[in-house]
Amino acid sequence: MTTQQPDHGAGQLAAAYAQPDCALEVSGVVAGYGGGDVLRGVSLTVMQGGITCVVGPNGAGKSTLLGTISGLLKPRLGVVTLHGDRLTGKSPRQVLEMGVVQVPQNHSLFTEMTVRENINLGGFILRDRRVLGQRLEGVLEMFPQVSEWLGKKAGSLSGGQQRLVEFARCLMLDPKLVILDEPSMGLAPKVLKTVFDAVRLMHSQGKTILLVEQNARAGLRLSTHGVVLENGQVRLSGTGREVLEHPEIGALYLGGAVSGAGNGNGANGSGANGSAADAAQPGAGA
Image (cartoon, rainbow, N blue to C red):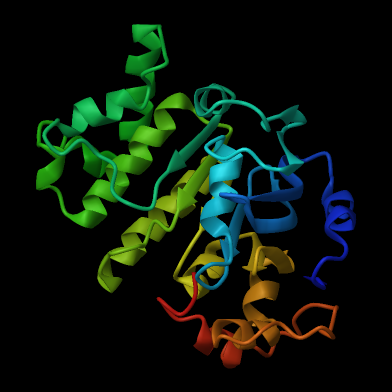
């Protein structure tokens, strides 16, 4: 478990986590809009085959982080790499071609097109129609319920159903990294289980996932790794369970700053039902 101080140790964190099975590495990234820095020296890693969940209060820099990874925003300082290949400086199209696919926070299906047409659009850069057909078969095998909706207009589906179609669409490129930006946003609580089960299914099929989630408790519980952003900096990192149970996350989600001291040695296993879990209810943070 890592508890970080502001403006210190960003590079050290990246070095500490630079392991052979690291898929994505964000190192010392400073980025923002209109001359103002939102991210201030962010360093983190996404491990191959894992689910890394990023949580934090509003304004922490989560959307800026995803935009920087996807090539929508060029950082002022720092580097982002995927399996050692530099993403920084690449266009969004080039980042996509390198294997990074993002499912945005807001529903992104073309509502007047059929579900089949929407899913096939996920493979629009594929030139081989045979490969496109094989990918569609594989996606429908993973999400068999989507097969029942192929002829329907996407706009006729419920919010949860649309999210599953978006997941299916993103897999058409067989991505190296799947980025999910708050997939539970706007969904009823009873629908959340279906969405999170789909995330687990993608993970079980070997996909590497970077998840930004407003439902911090649920997101961290299903994740292998957790990262807390606050004021554009990484403040806590560790396993999903460690981050969820860390006593300081309660202060963070209640609007307070993470204290400078920290315990530095992870969770003690007693916090699952304590302040951290209670504070990290849906809508409490990210």
